[in-house]
Length: 378
Image (cartoon, rainbow, N blue to C red; front, side, top):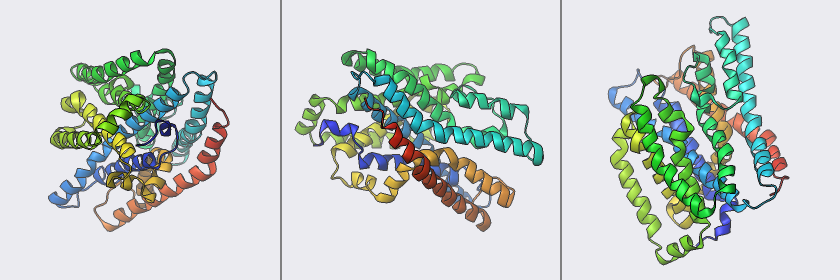
């Protein structure tokens, strides 16, 4: 049985889970979301099955809740609690993210003055203010270029808003009341999504993109971190060693039954129970690989390519869509597709370019900045 203190240390299985999350996202955007008109009906169904990769974002949310919640719980009494947490987050998040936003503005300027065939407006520039403030998930009105290059950052905005709230909650809410608060958030989030979906059509996107509506995944991750630090939880696992596998099996079967409804984005079904079911499954998976590290599932999470992908997943997530769309446009003058050889090769090239840029970003920017950020101690 792993020691409780391990939750604050780097665990290889969690890097594998990050790798799984970003792999799911890549499968969705690079395969399922590409144009497939050149394929037969059955091949189109096969590739569209990878639309389930969109749920990789839910895994990221659960991981964030678990990891950030764990860090904050371990240091909640520290005199440097807020200062250290936010300085470390600044070093981790802002350099790569703001580099992308600045590159977006540069691209807008180049297109505006030198490539009029790619139309740009003043909105392309003015909307950037939302991204600097991490509030882009509260706005659906986006320009075409903005959505193509920065659309995926809605989930990062949710993460940043979570970083603002979580330290205050964990610092000032006693552990027993924290448990009650987390359970309340988990139960209320799907109800809030339902209310949003029953409201005006123009605001229904909040059910998928707003922090209050997606807070259950983050709260479940924090609940997992709270349990992981409880000796009673570990004692229960020692007395009931089969429970993690049974729980994972239950949520796997439940998710399998819910899959048809989950493939209808922003529908009432996914808005009420779908996101919550996904978060519960991913939390069960996370705890299983931590508890049963000898299992074949945990072994997969320790596979080096998957762990390496997890290490660079942040940059990969931010740039994979702009790289894919940019390469397809400038090489083929077309939207991303994979239904002929040139288009398939362009997509493969996009994968290598994305991973190459992410590796360079990790070695020359992110890793040194992380090391610098960890000079600040709790």
